[in-house]
Image (cartoon, rainbow, N blue to C red):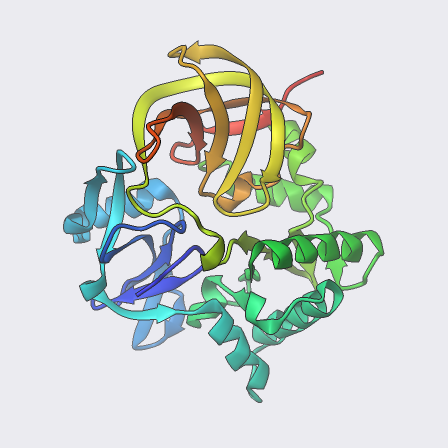
Length: 339
């Protein structure tokens, strides 16, 4: 079984997990609970109701109370993770297959219709094949509500770059269906995200207002995720070893943002100064498994970032460097530094 970022899986206990990243242990999937069976849930059918957990702390709390066996300290990532054994998986939800199903269905709910329309527009303008686009999130598992957003996902480096360019053009050309967030819209997004990612509203607006992969489509929030295809993933589990080296705050300059679009995202950095925390060097990159940190900064821009510092060791070559990883704590952030 292969599962990647954007996929969802259902366990034999009917809990639905979202898959994280592209590198997983043998016979396991790194994933976290997202939709939990609940008689008081507001999603699904009467006999099959679900509630949603989003915050990482809430997810771990649920696991500790209901499935502590899934929490393991992974020796490669040196992190407490939720790892679901293949034997516990009842179903894997495929975003590409789901979108294909919606496109041929004659009975679609309003949000599903908008999902198909958005995908059709994006495919046409970007010139990408249907095999490179899918739908994730609540629509993927049929647990959307009238207030749910749209979570398209694009696969493959070439298709992702074409899709992102298309989204920028759609927003710039004033397409009546695609709209960038207004300041009020950004405030609503800030209120939601600031629950587990700290930064000021002005810092938030500065970076989020220029991201073309999010906005409103026919009045519904959308967030497009970009993921590399399997053939483009060079790292296998165990090829690289990560070690927790503490927490720090740094200033740096982005030297290379070519991997900033994808989830997981990476920024090569230079001119690094450790403001707080362990003074380790060389810190060569900032990375995150969370889509909200994609396109956070551009090449040449100065940034201030705070997060966990890891020592990265290539097992084959023995080469070592440090990186900062964002998204594990609510105090993690990356903002543009004042010039």
